[in-house]
Image (tube, rainbow, N blue to C red; front, top):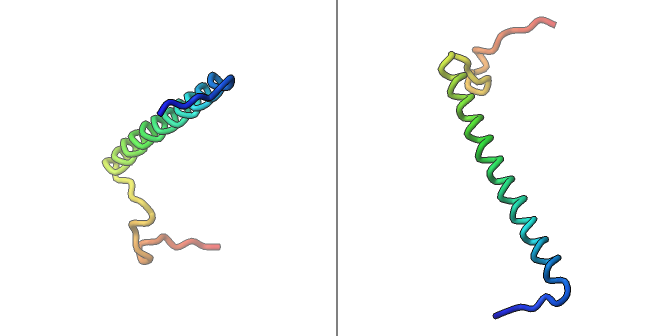
Length: 65
């Protein structure tokens, strides 16, 4: 099925192409950021830094107010 967009064909095709490029760039950005964050977490894990969510309430430092 061939669709005719009429006189607005160039605008419609350009709009869809721009949207596709933006979505592809966002996906690429998320993938690169994910890789960066996992690398950073591995480095922190190797250096001995632990996550606060991994500690129990007994391990929590007492603070004085």
